[in-house]
Length: 238
Image (cartoon, rainbow, N blue to C red; front, side, top):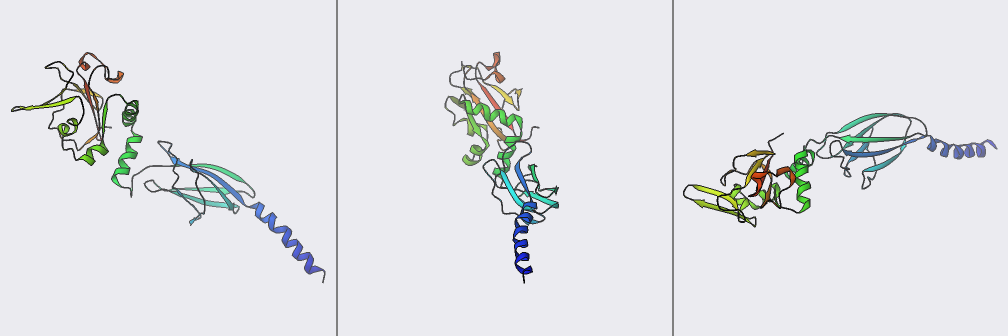
């Protein structure tokens, strides 16, 4: 008769011990190129979705992992799924970072282009200069939303820029520039002879407009920049 109470007591004592033998995973999920925290990622253990919440830094704690070889899958829309195998020891806490590679799959075009602008250094420089608030910047979002068809359409909206047309064609100049003095053009960081008013704009990622020498950043300075600078960045360049 005394064996039953002893057996029950033994089971009660063993339950916390069994729970302690499980391990846990502390993870973080981020973009492999930009380092951006991917807070919408999904975590799976051995093929089953885990009930975890990711913090604003995309960190998570996954407890109750049974000892042994566990397969951890991490997924996020627009990224290549990542699978890793972890050997979990009893009571062990494993820390692991998960770097996902951006692919753009199953993402709207706008999100893909925004992500691409973060991963290409030249677009990062474009965004850095835009934050300074010197000059005028036209983004691809604006080009699309306003339906610009060519350079003239976009530049006509910039204060201090004049698009002059005659029977021979159209020319772009800064209102503060001396007569006959046209702006210097840069295309993907290289000096270009011109970029006509009628040039299609479908492949343009961004445009920087500096209306006088006082606005021109060091990257575009020179004697030819006295009459302003127009820098065009295309999506096709590496």
